[in-house]
Image (cartoon, rainbow, N blue to C red; front, side, top):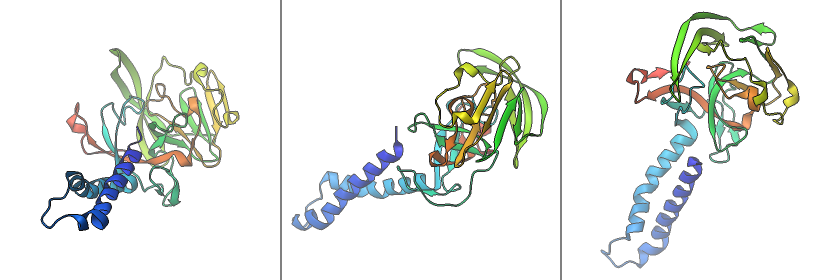
Length: 268
């Protein structure tokens, strides 16, 4: 569901009704006659819809985390806020950038439109910038041939959908300026080669084998991976994220019904 488009339509409809009443209908009403209920609703809702539309389009937008691909950074049920202007001002609905602010950096947690279906929003961590060579070999991440600094800090156990108990290794990894946690599943391969889409754009930039993969990020695109490294549907399977698909930078957890302690957590 394209909520921005729905909001825009509601804004145009209520605004049009209000303006038609101001310039045409109001003058024809008898003195003291009550305005039509439709006009009353339009006049009341227009400023509210306008405020919400501007807030969500240019400042912050709320999202809910639907899967465990970003564990342990983000959990299923987290309600997060996304900064809409960090990566530039974009026109609502069309998502066309009209003003640059900052470029995505390695380690940023970013919301973007899924390349296979732009009506869906995904959230992953920026691993590769334009021109980077991203390699994930034997569960170790390399950028431009350099291994990313990491250390194992313990075990991490969780229950997946279907009541499947999962035991993972918890690592701290430094990616750009971000020191964050990642999960590694010892019994899973670094990439499920059979699940890789053979037709995604610039597929020739990537090489896959049983040890992992290596991809060179094309200009104007980004390589995204989940923090739950071996249980994430990300760029290794469906390709690069073009700049035009960027929605914003995730920065804050504002609610979680299952774990109130997560409220107020800053996303690193």
